[in-house]
Amino acid sequence: MPVLKVVDRDGVEHDVEAQVGLKVMEVLRELDYGVAAICGGMCSCATCHVYVDPDWAARIPEPMSDEKELLEELSHYEARSRLSCQIEITPALDGLKVTIAPDE
Image 1 (tube, rainbow, N blue to C red):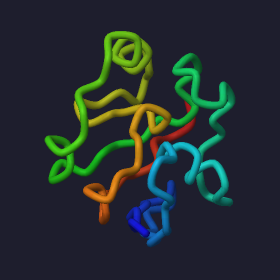
Image 2 (spheres, one colour):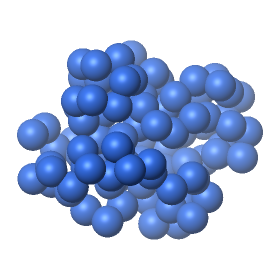
Image 3 (cartoon, one colour):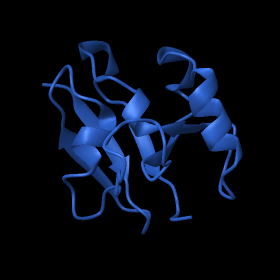
Image 4 (cartoon, one colour):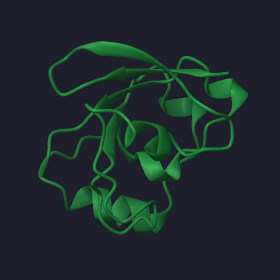
């Protein structure tokens, strides 16, 4: 089972097992220190905002236009911002490191 490296809002890194086929958001919303994911993965609320570690950015698909538009409206937007509901867990993402973005 792939492992996600998740840095919470306090800067603490956690190793979390993630089932292949789920979205990163589905794993993060189950954690006490995870994301709210209010829209449930519909790419409409941005409450699952994370920062992808620069070493992993090229290994995940580019964001689609609707995700980009949502992200660019956020006050905590950075070039490495992603909505975790748009990243599917695959075996190739074993070790993916994400940092949970501040609440908006």
